[in-house]
Length: 421
Image (cartoon, rainbow, N blue to C red):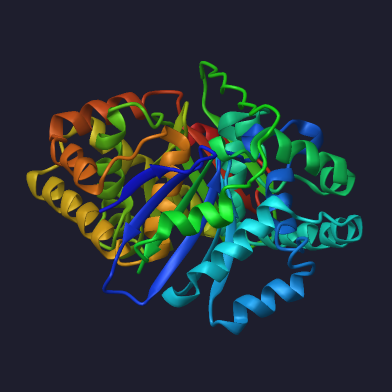
């Protein structure tokens, strides 16, 4: 399905040929994200993502880059996480070289104009305000602050307004030199790819500048949790948004496969336990879900719901009951089979997207320096048993392990602490 090669400058090239398509996604990812930052530059990874679209020596303005992309009917974007950042253009196959030229120019010769930096600060701050005005999204950010605390993994990817205002051009230059090296990057093409794709990649990406020294992030320091943690972000809303969760497994722990299946049973799809109990049988929420997410050195298992204000305690109690039912009882053979088929089916559907394939394999390689095929992954999912799920549930949903983050018109923590103690 894919092929991995190295360019002369040690940049990894991954090609995913899909010759039946007429499009291709060109993507370059780097091992850089918010957990690589210090407090005084928190948010710079995401800020830099914006700045790479603001002009390079070859394409000196944002308007020129946008005109080129729009002029070939392509789409482009980028994303920043806590552990990686990527940039992509999806175009018709005949414009792959132009896409490569634009991406490489953005990354290797960005102007980082001081005027553009100052102007973009306002854009970044408005983006932060937009997300914080969306409780369904913001509650997830607050939850990770609650679970991980004052460590880089618990900081907001976008930073905060005072920090963003204080970032200077020299900060960007130093950050690029510390992480944006070919050895810390991967180039991916997914779609209709020409036979000379390696030569094209060499032409446009062989002169990416080397970094002086690739830095690493600070390892997350786990702290033994001895009591339930509850946090409330007071906001006058018509709905209570909450995340109830526990610390999960890291991306190298084999228990993550059972946790993935458990997440599907509890909160993925309209027949999941939480959807049936919270929405269908009680009408307490429109959206409710659950799942397990991994980082390199830890993870989270969370349930999210947007609940009726007057029924928030009832909804929370139902969610906790469903989580803990997996500790007391084995999941049924029918549930286990359905969850595995759901995971298999979702991968099949997503694999029809060149963007999904490029994003998935680029971030997997950035984090692991190797790739696990979908078949290999699904074989491990298939080996998960009901006993495995019960053991994982017992480890996850033990006493005093819960973290609860709420957004809504609430001021008193104690009723929620009592519900979870």
